[in-house]
Amino acid sequence: MLMPDDIQGMRADTYLSACEVQLSGKDFDGLNAATLGTEELSWHSTTRAWQQHDCEVRNHLAVLRAGKLGVDAAPNIRPDAGASSVGESIRSLFENDSPLNAEEALFDLHWRFLDQLVSGHLFDLDFLIVYYLKVQLLERQQGFDYEKGREVLDTVRSGLAPYESFTELVT
Image (cartoon, rainbow, N blue to C red):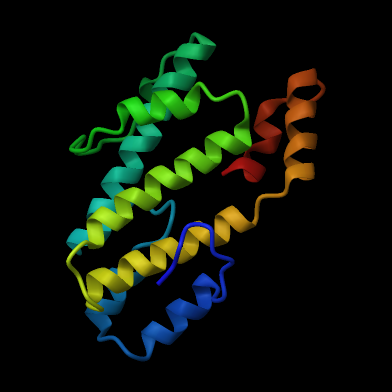
């Protein structure tokens, strides 16, 4: 069982490779679609629920960021089901002064959603999908480097470089 503060033992690509030899082609496709940042909706309900949750979170963040910058959010909004109620949680983490603390709050929001999504499942495809998403979240979280993040933040704040040049570091 994965825990939010665990040091990850298995990489996401290793987990995916191990599952590929054990699952049918269709089931593996459902699992493989559960990749962070994937926009194409999966046929599998658990993967699709994650994708819709992630899209809704990103849409809320886009609206808040656009409001702060005084620009139109519409070009950055993606269609979503809007079924969950993440708005208040997103607003709270957006108002955090520390980007690292905001990322940790976002991680917790995603983790809680995944825990709810897999509730009542015991080692079925839904469980495997949620496990894979959690491994990816842990891998992403463990890739945070305070010093590199501080350098990027200081550079952006100082206005020495355009924000767009740092998008590969923050996505």
